[in-house]
Every structure is written in C-alpha cells, then in structure tokens.
Image (cartoon, rainbow, N blue to C red):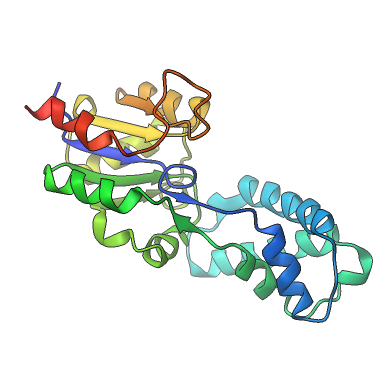
Length: 224
C-alpha cells in the first residue's frame, strides 16, 4: 500500500536532548552556586520523571507556566540543601534543556516533502513542543504537529494517531509512523491501524533502522 504520510515521534526520533546536567552545573555556577554533576543529574532525573507524569496538563500557556513552576520546585527539593536557594532556579532549569535536531532530520524531512508525502510530528509533550521545533529549525519542514497535551490523549492511545490521520488527510493504511519506543510508538500506531517502523539509534535492534537516513528511499519504493 502506498505511503502518503509519515508520522514521526519527536524526542529520540527528530530531536535529541543532550545530557542536561553539565549545563545545569554551569547555570548554577553562574548564579554563585556550586554543585557536582552527580548531584545535578540526580536532581534533574527527579524533575524529568515528574515532568513525564504531568506534561499533558500543560494544555496552554498558563498551564505550561504552572507546570514549569512545579517542575522547578521538584528540582529545588532534589538538589543539595545548599543549592536550594539558588536565584531564578526556573531559568537555570529551562536554560539547561538544550534540544537540537538530529543531524539527518532536516534533509530527511525535506526529501519526504519532495516526494509529496505529508510529514506530521506525533509526540507526548506539552504545548511548548512547537517552540522546540521552531528553535531547531524543523517547523518549515513539517505539515503538522500533533501534541498529546492538546489532544488529551498520549501514545500509545490510538486517539492521538487518529488526530494525526485527520491532520494529514489520509487513511490509516496510507500512513507510516516512525518512533523509538516499542510499547509507546509501535504498539500505539499499530493499534490505530498504521504501519510502524522502529528507530533504534543504538543499533542494538537488528530489525530496526539506526537513523532516519534511509526513510525517503523506503517511502519512495511504495510510490513507484
């Protein structure tokens, strides 16, 4: 069956977050507070776990502001006691989260566009994902962005994929979803009737692709 739309996960697929603990150490040092990288890592892992459990609550700018305040307090409580009074800890937290696109992502998205294929991001994220995609330069290369916080459903719930199908204007058997998690991306897409492709950048899964580079060729083979 011809592929008319490619859906892509965001984090781990199109964009990456380099380990943020060194950046947090530097941000706190700029505020006169010294912490070890190990302490920064432990505190950020607590904050990130809280964020993952609550990101769908950030459905708009007001809600996002509140979530960021709560995440800051989780981080504060997890830092060593001497660092909890750091000035503008929220700014330090946000500045340490430095997302960037994977090197091949822009060219792959451009190539898919040249094939006439709709390119839609389908991600479990808060409403700030649009800002992240804009900062990484990927927005002009996309035809749509479907975010769990806006839909009210997170992958693997088929509802978020159904919204993406509506955005792309294609049937389920005309769409391919690419993502890096088996239980979230692949299971959810298949439950919604889509084909799914596992991206494993570690190369550990022989049945998966290790990067997005070959994706346009795979899609082109269904069009010819």
